[in-house]
Amino acid sequence: MALNGVNETAAEALGDGQRPAILTQELQTHSFQVLGVTWKSGEQLPSGAHISVRTRHDGKWTGWQNVRPTTTTASEDDSKQSGRTGTDAFLAGQSDGVQVRVEKAADAKLPNDMELTLVDGGTAPGDASAGAQKAGKQATSGEQPEIAPHIAWCTNDPNFMPDPKDPQKMLSCQQVVDAEYKVEGVPAKAAILNHALQGSNANDYTEAQVPGIIRAMFAYLKESQDFGDGAYNFVVDRFGRIWENRKGSIAAPNADAESIRGAHTAGWNVGTIGVGLLGDFSGTNQPSDSMMQGVAHLLAWKFSQYKINPEGKVALNGKEINTLIGASDVIATDSPGNASKKLPALRKEVADLMGQAQHAS
Image 1 (cartoon, one colour):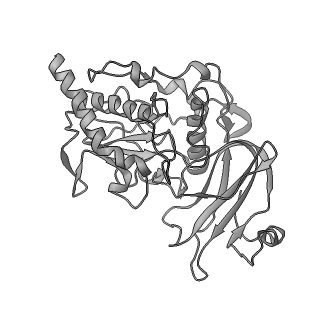
Image 2 (tube, rainbow, N blue to C red):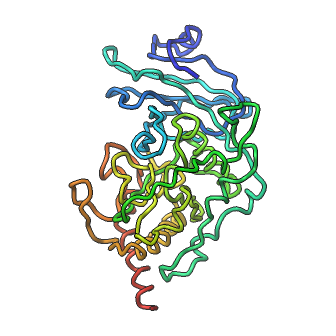
Image 3 (cartoon, one colour):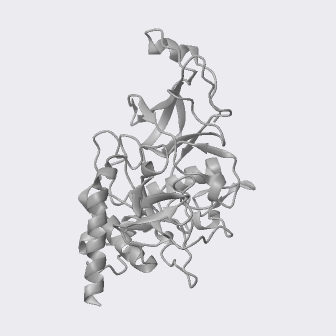
């Protein structure tokens, strides 16, 4: 849906003489779960500009909520060249209405061809039981923890999205994942954390909703930017459950010690493991202890495979960085928000788990 111009009736309803650069009316839509705004790659929101949305749920409209630009990039690392970038996935909850507002300084220029995308991850048989064990139930030896494989969320249920070549035909998530997509990069040398969602509903989902949310995240990236698969190698939910987000990430490294390249942190996807924290940790929001424990178990295992010191440093992109960082350590973003404050303790916990594994062996 193209975003341009100002709906005069909606502008009058704002009051106080406010005049955004873009303002839609209150739109009635199909049922959706996740939304995002995209624009042409190579362009960005001007300084001081911001996008905000309202959504309708059970007949009631929310207040305005900001939607932040993404840290992911399809054009850099995915097999498809979509020519578009945009915002992170915004978890609206099950909604059937939306209003979009874009504000900027008077002399600033917005990106070209701004578009709104609305998607729904739907439900699939087995969603309620798809998740792996919680991190607290996992052994503390640094061995492979319980991980829900790619097929647990990206199912063969034939109701994921219409076939671009034949809109009357529905495809499964597995059919949509690019068959030529599994790009293998260099050995992993570090891990990067991002918060993978945004919005007031991003931290209160149920266990059974998680597969649908991860599907919706991919559906947004696929439909709007032609991603070949999920952006992260792994996603960890607030219950501490670990999900393979990019196909092949569990099996990596291969015989040549190569990793599966993600599309999680623009310019820093080669040689890193991308971990998406399923939530929004801006403002006062904090990741749960279970989530951080799940991340620790995951990285203790992966760092052992790649022989990475979680408390060490490594040279990447001509810069010396810690081997376990947040995206905000290397690019201009707030991601992973307040999870950044957990990094010193996380590095130590990963090292402790790896030490226990060495001691056990």
